[in-house]
Structure formats: C-alpha cells, structure tokens
Figure 1 (cartoon, rainbow, N blue to C red):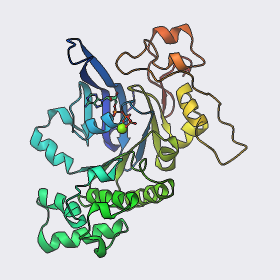
Figure 2: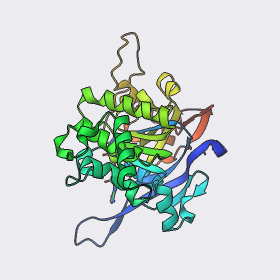
Figure 3: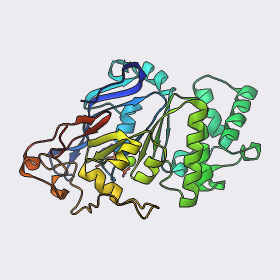
Figure 4: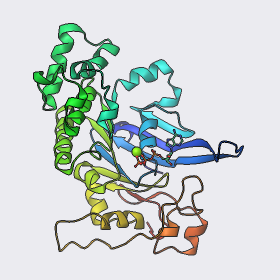
Length: 328
Ligand SMILES: Nc1ncnc2c1ncn2[C@@H]1O[C@H](COP(=O)(O)OP(=O)(O)OP(=O)(O)O)[C@@H](O)[C@H]1O
Ligand SMILES: [Mg+2]
C-alpha cells in the first residue's frame, strides 16, 4: 500500500482497476476481459511531475483517462484534491475537468482541422463561460505568447504548422484554462528528436510559471527521467516500482526497471547499468501469467514468482517495489 501524503496530494489512486470487455470473434459468445489496469496504487503531490513509464499496451493511457474522469473504473478509488470521483455527479465531474488538462501524442488528430488557432485556443473559454469577444482574444494572444506563437498565427489552420508547433497549439489550448493538473500522454513521441527537447523544456517552464502538477506518460524512460520528480514503472496493468527520479536511476530494484535502464543510452562511458536484456514477449493483458507477471521474462525468477503475486511494498523511504526477490 502506498502511503498517501494527505493534503499534499492532488491525486491519489487506490486499488485502481479497469477491465474492458472483449469477444474473441464476432460469432463468439465467450466474453473475455482485457485487464488494462489491474490494481494500482499511487499518489501525485501538488506541484510535482509524476512520470509513468512502460511498454506499449501496459495501461498508461487508461490510467490517465481514469484520473481525468473520462472513463469510470471497474474497481478502486480515485481522489482529486481529496474528493472521491465516484461520488461526483456528471455536472460536478464536468466542473472538475476544468481544473484538468490533457496533451495527447498526435497533435494533428487532437486539433480540429477546420478551426483556426484562435478558435481552437479560445473555445474552452467560451464553453466554460469564462470570456468572450475582445477579452477572449486578449487571453488567447497572451497564452499563445507563452507557448512561443504570435498574432500572425491566429487565423491559420493546424495543417499549416509543423508537428512541434501543432503541439504548442495543443498546449496553449490546455493553458488557457489555467488547470491545476495536466496529463501529458506521450507529448513528444510523435515529434522529431530535434523538436522533442524544445517541447519538454517548454512544458517544464510552464510548470514553474503556473505551478502545474503533471502526470507525464511515456514509453521512453529518457523522456520521463528528463522531467519527473518521481517515476512509476508499469508492466502489464500493474505498477512494479515507484521511486524518486534519481533513486530509480541509481538504485533500480525491480528487474524490469533494470532492463528499461539498460536500454537507455547513457552519455557517460564509465556508467554501467545493471545489464539485463529482456527475453521473450510481453504477456497478454487478457491472460496475464500467474504470480509475478514479469516472471516469464525475469532472469532471476524463482518458483515463488510463478505461484504468488508479489506485494507492492515500501523498501526504502518513498521507494516502492513489487518483487519477491527484494526484501525490505
Ligand atoms: N476502450 C478500450 N476497449 C478495449 N480495450 C482497450 C480500450 N482502451 C484500451 N484498451 C486495451 O487496454 C490495454 C492498455 O491500453 P492503453 O492504451 O492504456 O496502453 P498504453 O500503455 O497507453 O499503450 P501505448 O504505449 O501503446 O499508448 C491495451 O491492451 C489496449 O488494447
Ligand atoms: Mg498510450
């Protein structure tokens, strides 16, 4: 169980699960469950960047959508600013969502191609009845300036911009409501490497300036490490390790985390990560392996790992891991 930091927490999730129903074929009556998120616990403190990293399909986006209240959990609790999302009416959820923003991976598909930049960024102000007319236009201009765009961009359409600039527009659309909490779901994965650092730096600057709290989702540990205060590592619907960023790099305890770190190129040639190279395939989220989900790929697996699911426990201050081979 993850210790909650009480009122310092902006977000807290407990025993969170999301299962999606699936049928094997169109004629099949057999319902199977995709266990996209299968019991996770964590909390995000006010003002911090909480990184969530893991391979494709492990459930990262689903965690983000659950916290944003876009989908309802199968089980478990989500608290935002101390309030239980499950106890909120649709109207309360709608109001709460004003305090939350999201930036997706593909700016081209998240921006309406028929709307100008001015309309895209100004629209949330209208929808929420915050400003209109000249007042709205002034706010839009101020926000565009924050993301490095200017008045010359106002009447242009998304397709006239590069991927990096489109992502700046998507960030401006979030910024305009001055949210407390922003989910960044692979914000730079679709961008050229040369542009990625600019966008990450912009996101860091905005966080400082506006005291945002971020949930930064990425399959790339490099991206997450660059910005996060604390990092959670996810594997097939479960969080296997949480630690402060530097602690995770210097003292990764879960063999899966060690394998992710070994795959990250390090500029310092003297630095030797604990070298684990993964074998085998990522297991299915429909029929995850019994015991520890990582055991079929783990070079250290013991019989217990096949039989019993490891508990997620705190082994050092703020360092949590779910592994039978790590003792507190
Ligand atoms: N609405 C849905 N209906 C059915 N299955 C879904 C739905 N949304 C997600 N899934 C499944 O849940 C699992 C987790 O998906 P999710 O998108 O959360 O993973 P992810 O870690 O964000 O992956 P990626 O790195 O590819 O974005 C996947 O197997 C996915 O196919
Ligand atoms: Mg995703």
